[in-house]
Length: 271
Length: 167
Image (cartoon, rainbow over all chains, first blue to last red; front, side):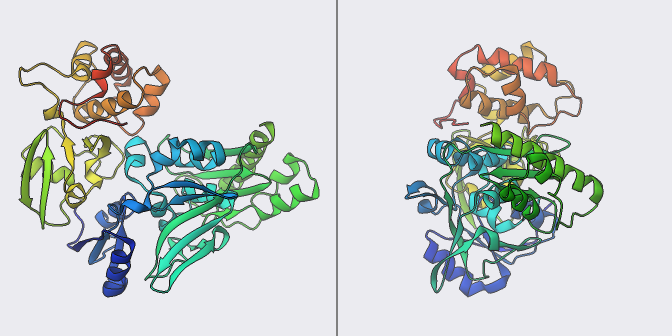
């Protein structure tokens, strides 16, 4: 499968990338690792006429502790996040979900910014980030702004990132030794989640239970009231709108959300 | 557009379309046909090559993205004297193939696994090769071959060219 023809622009800095985005408008797409974009271009589900390659911008790849947060550059590859000693110690859930994406070859290419900007509701990293909290930092012609992760993913493949902005960083709170859990249900190990649940510090996020990754609000409220894990997890699918497809029907997804939430909370509590 | 890519130690400059996939560049422009294209959708791993020290699926990388990179394909593993790479030798010794279609990708991915973890367990090999499918389901001997290759020491996780394999 071969994508439609496009012009290729190599950006050497964030400023160059933003200038190219402004010049080419909505016909342009940013290319980082390309492991979400190129597959949909090969299927011709996306037909950009300009690709702006930001994969070679050196200062977008880093992990830094800054106060109560860990800041990770958008260009950091998922295998680097999976292995990074700082991430493993300060935000172990983030390291884990980065390591659950695809397979080693995919994680060698795929970037943090790419998985955030793609906004696939079945995606591991956004699910982990939504449970962790924190902000997605974007940069545009007017400068930088922070989008809380709770407001970042607005719809199926849609985000709050504007057409002339790019994701430059993700900031997550340091959870350190707090217990966490991540339960992903798949048919094969390197598949997308049929449903997944992430839990840390009383917050729970679900993959593939709506058009975006979502928080299990009723479960979180029940936990805050002092409900048991079993009672709270039984509410995990409230307010969700899972779809039916060849992998699972909606009722089965609801069952999985409750079950995986219970297991994730139990794992978190056992730490 | 012009790209300059070093494949198996040989640098060349070529004029390519921006949409040319690395897998097609290797096969059709460079004439290196060991790299197979299986699923063409980042699932099967048959097109795995090493780019700048990392195993990648070349059906999902643009040639343009590899501009300036060091690439190693299966053809680049065998020494000038015809001596097999330790992973190739182990696949032969353990009969780590049936039809052979997935083998080039399996070998390149296995080098990545051994670069990352020179002394893996059976389970670690299976997890490391999770991105490579064998439609003959010949996994037992493939895993055995990777474990045998590990006994050859660090060379099993390296490629002959100057590039250092990280994972």
